[in-house]
Image (cartoon, rainbow, N blue to C red; front, side, top):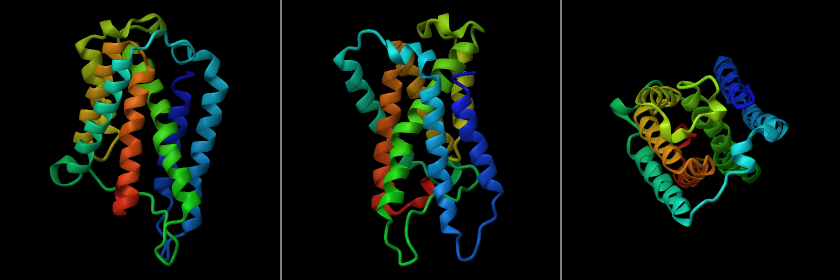
Length: 216
């Protein structure tokens, strides 16, 4: 449960926030609930950190693995911004608008949102989707399971579930395939985390630059 709890906090928060009605004018102070959620997740990750053996002692990491994380993360980012409409999207999200009533971006709010998006979410999600679920689908003793031996069934199912978590399901599918492949190839959870962080970091900066808040 140590790998599932931070993710469960995230999902519960998203579900609860969807129940909060939209206001006219918007209740902008409610945006800080997302920042508070990220802080709670950080506390949960810190509390469970001693049990994350693959993060505390990841083993040798080759330089080209970090290059792989960089390139793949940017590639997923490109997919994300090009498949954000039409058939590639299911449902709608409110997004996160860090602007003030005058339309200017509020720096503290935007910075904290970007930090959570680029640093907290990748660690939380990769611990759940790759470290836990991918291996658990093959073996209940998932900690001892070698990711290189992940079955096609586990890879397909974890990828599909990862895609279903996102309204941009096609981009989520590509992302899930990519992060799964990286984890299986390198056996080092830090590499898909780095790739995921690169995707989210680039996407967050792009969102701030284009003000496409729906993707946040």
